Length: 308
Picture (cartoon, rainbow, N blue to C red):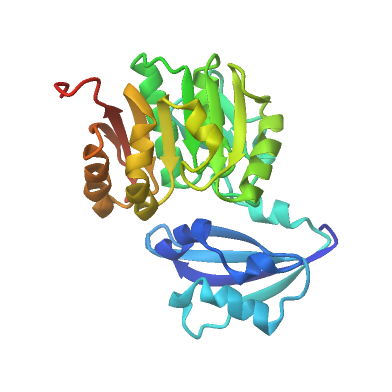
């Protein structure tokens, strides 16, 4: 899509922007579904976000109505529609998407490929069809948490990235523990396709051996490969608070005694509820990364009933 595209912009709330990664909108059923991008509209107003949708064809009234359903807070405000001539929508969507430095990691788009500082673990993630470019606090918080665990000397031989999106967190973990086995899963087949592309870009080998990442389309822990690979030394789950609570029994059961769990995608006021759900299944809070309103919880599996 390089000759023409149409960009539609709507105001939205932060909660609506975050909910998009779980959305099953009718837009996804279109022959040429739009690519959705969200960003903070005003740094002084944390709840004020914007939704940009890039269409390959002129959006119809029906398409615009589907889009407006994703941002009900916009009310009757008409969406801004503009035709983009002779420019690639991916390039446009990446304007302003600056690299981030989170812990040991430098996450960038192709436009900043040569900007990695010395000593940083560089990962290239193209903005596009899946959640997880490193820009959101939930993802960058996990990157900081991974860096912290590595600095504490944690040994990881077997890891799972549950709800992987772009694959970023699985690949980041493999960069820190290159001899580990890794599996990354997502409920969305498109996300797994994107993760496969990103693996190639970042020199991550795909497969089931040590130092390789296996990819799987799975809803939660309901996949034979996820079950066969357990128990895990490290599980990363950057999803949303509701699914995290629902998955607590199956996720906790898949973690080895003494293993670690990173929980993200939850708001500050949801942290206690999410942590309590995992405490009921043998997990203890071992640390916390605070990034604005989006904390990352680091939990540890009890080694024995007497461990505190």
